[in-house]
Length: 247
Image (tube, rainbow, N blue to C red; front, top):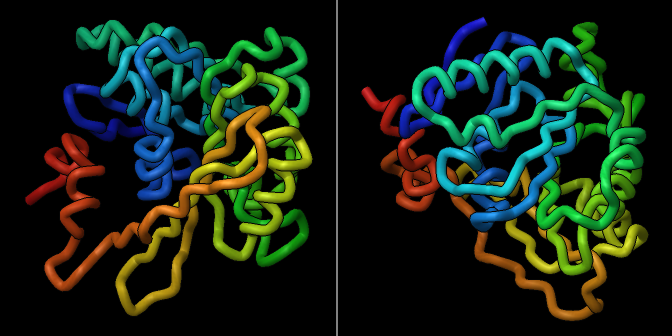
């Protein structure tokens, strides 16, 4: 277990099995929470996204759900660490150990403003499956499917509430179809490229519960690097996190 700084004094405990990536930071930024939001993250892992959200906003509360006890313990340790360091709003994060397919039924329906998920990118049974159980759960749909995630998000969200996730481009049709099947209309989409000469490697998508079909805001491609390293936009997104990793 080791500490990673997230900027502005916020820190997160990570391990080799439970850590975060650029995708995590991009999703947290894309989610664009508002002060006072009631938020749920499905599959929180070590809890990086809730910690990034409380770094920059003041939500009403964040419920962080994961099926892996080790991940939830890491997040609990991070919450205690941040509170002890004077980041009192870390107490707004509530870790919950449980199955995404079951936990939403135990929570009040239709009360969340924002649901966030960085889901497994690969279909169950596809690709080379990691023998490490934590990595297998994170990368493959072994514990929940995209349909399970969308069903959970839809139940939790209030009318007009937002669901945001990231996924690989080859699964775009799956994501849009699952969102619509559960009463959430895709309204914002952004592709992410490593460099100008590379194909998109990720997309970020937002849907609204109960919204009418029709217009979707397809944003300009987010470019991660140019000839000078990180693009200006990426440096802005990384913000105070990047300040801890320069030099």
